[in-house]
Image (cartoon, rainbow, N blue to C red; front, side, top):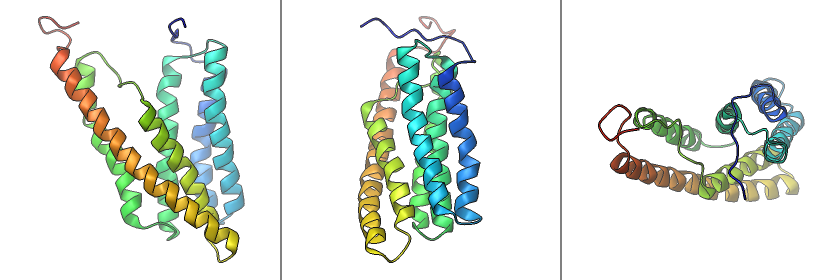
Amino acid sequence: MPDLEVSDRVLTIPNALSILRLLGVPLFLWLVLGPEEDGWALLVLAVSGFTDWADGQIARRMNQTTRLGQMLDPVADRLYIFATVLGLALRDIIPWWLAIALPLRDLLLTFTLPALHRRGFNALPVHFLGKSATFCLLYAFPLLLLGDGDSTLNLLARVFGWAFAIWGTALYYWAGALYFAQLRHLIQTVKPVGEPGGS
């Protein structure tokens, strides 16, 4: 398979879909915390999930992979996770320890950025474990939102939602540990830009 060509283009279909996903974040929060229209909030999450899948497919098939898209996609994922845990915690659907634990991991990872930038990298490649963790969490939170009630359907949604949430949180931190291991290897093998032997 040929190497994926990454361009500096801005106006592409995948980038437009990523921006659409980002615009859905404040809409989702308003629906959850304002009128508490959970059905519409779930629809926003569903549309976000579809556009997340679609922008990746289109980027690969139409050769529209861009540096902007590579930045926007994980940012949108993180913002949806943050917005969802915030909304669910404020609604008392999930405990605050979980709402704090997930953004905390991302906050810790931001402290690695200077070391990456000094070596000419913007980010490390996303690995399968990280994608699996995000997948679990993006399934968990809609189910937990759907589980806010007393019916049998609500109960089933809560059970499956918590299963995804617990497994996803564990994978999220495991992926973070692997990221730190990758960073340590990079620091040991790649000299900072501008130093003798650096790029």
